[in-house]
Image: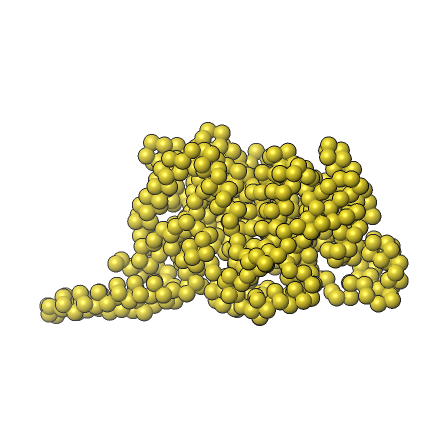
Length: 271
Length: 323
């Protein structure tokens, strides 16, 4: 559903010997693409990374925390398929329990509390589990005086959990607010795409907000906006560079410099 | 029961209106012929009222949504002028402009001062265009935050009225940081320690509603709705066709009764027979009672107790299992 929504197709994910870049249509030698952190060297298109790949390129080590918190179908929600089946499908597709992984990562000797949203798991949508895990890792960061880095890529709140998912916006914003109030440094990293209930809660509350190039970031999805105003959207609308220009983020950071940037920022804030 | 023939009726009210018309006919016939039909008329009136009660009790979520969206439904402005003895409207976000889709200010209720704010819809085409159908821009939320800080600074209880289809999805809204405005508003409201009460009076549309609803207590009008997405939006995304809005409304569990059952809200404000718009005075009395009772209960707690209770309330939102 969300794949269609954000124009992300299966072929974006490098698999064969050659990978076609969905942005410039050039064929890229897959091994070269992988060596380049999955960034197209023709047009700088940033392919989506899996959670594991994100961890690998960002941290020297990573220990997962708070695993074993599982989603439940509280509303007995059925759309084109029952929510419980959708969860099973997402689980077997990704091999993950839910749409987020949290834990403590290290860069050099710095310990960083981190959360990485998995877009491949029901569009990275935030339901009760995503909210709870962000809540716990943020509290853990506050108690241990660790910096907090959250990587977001999400379609928003998980509709299949109804108001329970909307309330995760309150829960995550509240806990991040308290963490910041107590002096913690929160860096929000926005990845393609970050919209809806995630962009309208913890993802835009960072002390510092950075985004990868070309990421779609916004409250409403472009299709909804087009339907509402009945006109074409401007070129580059809701992309990282557009948000930078409009004062909504601090920096657009290339994937290859992201780790170095995080390390620098964490160090400069006295961690 | 008073039914005005010039009013707009919702589909499920048709049989009731027909019966009501029959009563009127009988009354006319009785007057013309001089025949005593009081017995029949009374019996029929009883029947209409019973039917109305039963109908209202068994409404589907989508039918309740129609009441929540009724053009005659009391708005934030109606409630403010009905419930409070006096008020001073505070306008503008001090950054860009005054957003008419959110109104607020300082008001007097039985001698105490409170800060009040809420989404404002219009009641006809012209006023709806002016109010942007109750869909705020970022500046609306920034005005709301100004008022929240005002409440906190002067230790005044905060009352919010929720009635929006959602925050406005448009180019300028995005450019001025709709996401950030909502996120900041949610974050700020969750941190307030003054007594706060949010009342969903009509449509509680997604993040645009949540932005001013993170209160110590959440109440809902019986026929109001509160949802993560509009049933139309949900239907077109998940059900792949907006015509399944009815099904989506059921699946989303968006009625006051559903949400009381899910521990999302704290209480339901009962509406007059037929909905809040059928008897605005009674509605205002009930809202007034709800506000006074909640302010009293919350004021009895210390600031620290309120803070802890609020933290626990929102920390415990969500349902999951543990392995």
